[in-house]
Length: 216
Image (cartoon, rainbow, N blue to C red; front, side):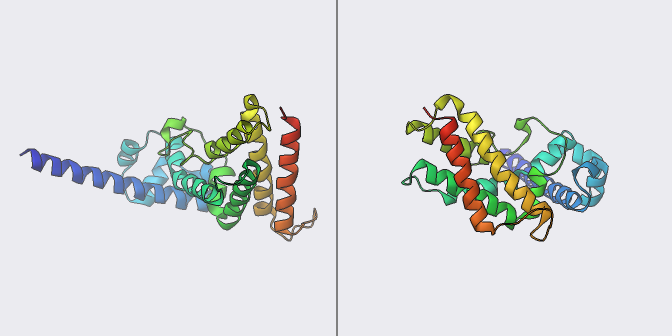
């Protein structure tokens, strides 16, 4: 009897998880078509083929729904940044490698990048995400923060300004990524340097400035 009950519970959990995946897929499709601001739980339910009751049972609100729709993209970005680094390399080189991986991920996955970093959307508590906030194996910002912590431990920058360094670096690489995605390469309002050279110049300027501003 216990075994049968456990089997039923397992089946219900699998069904619930599959419904969650189907709903997330519907959310991503709707965001791509009309943006995050056009999302409603009713539209999501219709697109996924469920009642609104099912959607509400699995997701607390619209903000949670959109937050969890971004989970896989954040995980993939964190993996790309981690894969680009090597613990035997100097901290500065690893920071630059992670920065290159970030920008190139955005250029290779424009829809996913736009969903996470360019869409205006309601924000849910970090606990609403399936990825763990602050876990450097899942959270790309936490991974970047750890790289700057390693730089600080080498004695090159102040350990009490890690948040500022990480945010400034992130803002720099996000700026290049978003401008390239929004304007493309044919926009005539400003000059477009060769992508790879411009990326290297950006990383050098960011790190030179950070090393100077936050030196020990």
